[in-house]
Length: 501
Image 1 (spheres, rainbow, N blue to C red):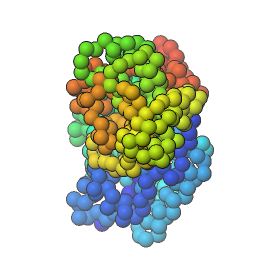
Image 2: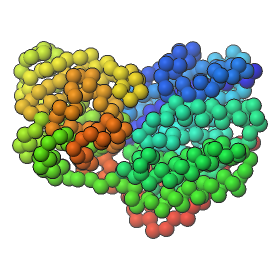
Image 3: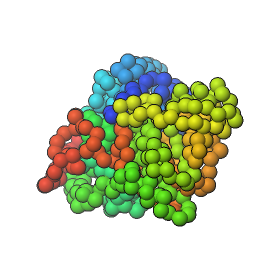
Image 4: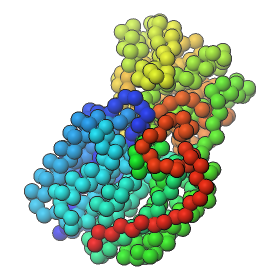
């Protein structure tokens, strides 16, 4: 009866967000709580459990689960140490209670700590030190993860998402668990080929259903469907996590077939490179965005403010678009989210229906955004607890206020929350379809959220710590040359091989 350790630690970070993340930003579950939580939500661990639970020969050893409530800035050194210590303690308890035959780790890949540029690699190193060198480790990752040499050396195989926007959390866990069971039950011998690609990719061509990247993803899926194909993924990293091994990667895991893995990884990399110059999003200036919106006679215009995307690690307190709305005297009805704890506190003190004079924006990223003074009526107050429209996950924006200032309706939260669907608006009584202009702080949402019904969608070149204009961010650690930070004239794919047995 194989005994499998299960552990989780996930966060996505923007190096360029001036506010640090901390231990308290994580949802922490331990032991059996890890199982009970994930059997109710369709995330990676839940997918893995669906495979393990179906096999009566498997015994589970749940250990530690940490998942950030939303993306954020670099994790403090003290907080990362607390995560590592907790992680290590739980793994040691699992080992002390009986033999361990294998381990599944649900990680993200785009963490960064003040003390560590490769947190996931550090966690796997801790795990190897406790659980030993001989048992198989399989790791699931976000395709925006930063894939390091250490992570590949310490794991037997990695599996990454196949979809963007992400809708295959559960399915990725299933793929990882099935791979692990092939090692345990069928004697599979994973060999991984990884090709480094010097590209930081953004934009619509990265949408896996419709963009050019689907050519790479389709090949990866075909590899996984073959007899010897254990796994295949394309990871284009998180351009906002500025660490030495930031780049795009193609990975192929085959059962004992080193040459096949190298060839297939190289083939995918060539397809990726063929399209790399198109893997950037065309942006419209702030002033032109509002001018264009004003010219749309009817319907809803969506302004995508990916530069302040909280799900990518931004602070959420940008007022750049609403400031431009005011400057240009745009008269349509505007709906926008923003983080500003002081404004929320003032609204709660005044109460529903009261008029307040307050400031919004620049509460966190004060170097980029200056507070905007408004006179507003408090329309709604809430505790900020709600469930996401996309997956039913519990989210918490802290105390939240809806403020109406002339033609502006602002949903103001105490802390950032993911904004890749409409749930934040709905939870606070606002229907985006009833507005002329809606600010969406996400690089992409599933099509039915906005794109399928809005009159026009504009990608705005606004300031922010997750700007798609990656040249504006000021990378200091990632390697060079790197497109689009540099001119990369030639690329010849070379596959590195990783094998633990």
